[in-house]
Length: 86
Picture 1: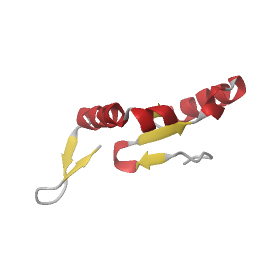
Picture 2: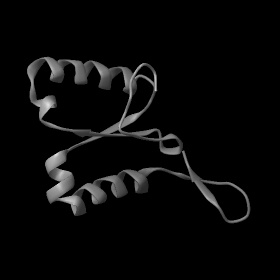
Picture 3: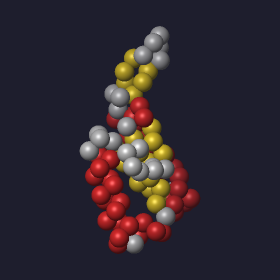
Picture 4: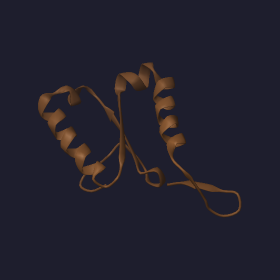
């Protein structure tokens, strides 16, 4: 994706999911993350960011956040009863 490696990319939803560890807490890495996020958003991508702690200790809310994003997307009919998200 561009010149970046993202943790997860869902093409149909234009959704990037990033999982941050402790290295994202450093000031320099934070600045780089912001720059990267702005560049990805310029391509009309949505970035959802979660910490490792959230994934390990609060998976229900992580999944709820992803679900809420999916539900906000309009459905586009494909062939015979199947749907795609834009």
